[in-house]
Image 1 (cartoon, rainbow, N blue to C red):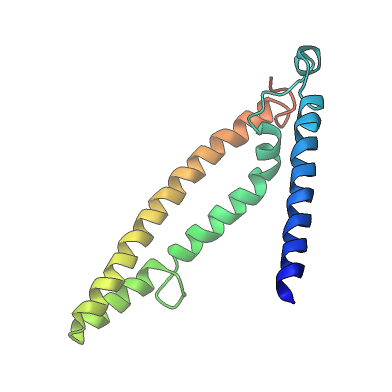
Image 2: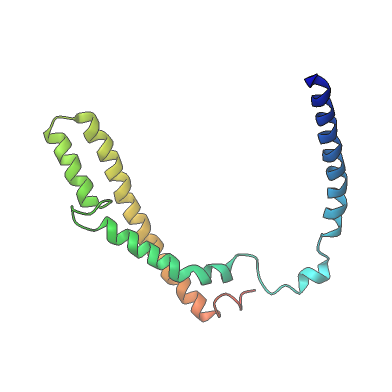
Length: 139
């Protein structure tokens, strides 16, 4: 009793798929831009306008992450707190735990360096955006 229903469902799905596949080529052919339409575009397609719009939010996010990483041992996510945990694990003789935490600490330190580099790069982007009308004059 289930076999005929499965067969009908399969055939219906194949028919819908074939119909969609047949019309997709026509739709794709209609939507290709002509050289005249693309010549009038005023942007280079690099997303400058969108990035310029997000600069303040990105700047706050990087600042917040760096502040957390550089906070004291009482702050979750800070480097000093993780250093303290590594020291405690070593004192307790938990070498596997200390190794795991040390790897996390190494990554967290590299994350700080990466965020500091991004912060400098973002400052250059902010300067560029100010000089270029927030990316609207790009092109």
